[in-house]
Structure formats: C-alpha cells, structure tokens
Image 1 (cartoon, rainbow, N blue to C red):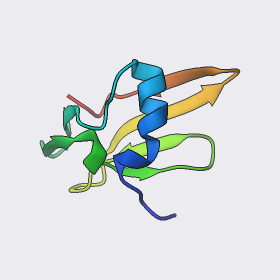
Image 2 (image 1 turned 45 degrees about the vertical axis):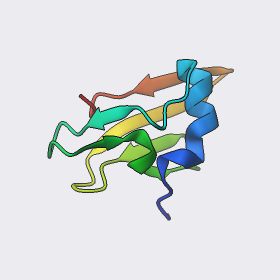
Image 3 (image 1 turned 180 degrees about the horizontal axis):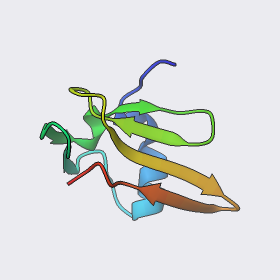
Length: 78
C-alpha cells in the first residue's frame, strides 16, 4: 500500500475535529519527531485511515467510520 500525506485526508479530519487539522502540530510518542499532521504517512482504504510517523513508522492515528460516526485513536501522538 502506498503512503500518502496528511493532506489526503484533510476533509475527513476537518469533519471530525471541526477545523483545519493538516497544519496542527504533532509529536511522535516513540521517536519524538515533531511536525505537522500534513507530514504524516497516511494509508487509506481497508477498514479505516492510518497515520504513521515518517521517521520510525510508529502508529500515531487510526480513524474508522461506522454508521456515520468516526472513531479516532490518536494514542501515538503527544
């Protein structure tokens, strides 16, 4: 599966968080890399959206949609 950047899911992020999120800052809990959400390695398709750190490939963000509601797990982000 080919990695996209965070801009590929900008619309979904805005729907979930209610504002532009690609320019929001993040820090990886595993390696400490900091950057903007637009820089994440994002994978779409399958059961949801996955965002990974470009430095260490740690799982930072998982978003799934069920019955019109999004479930978000961002435990990899500080």
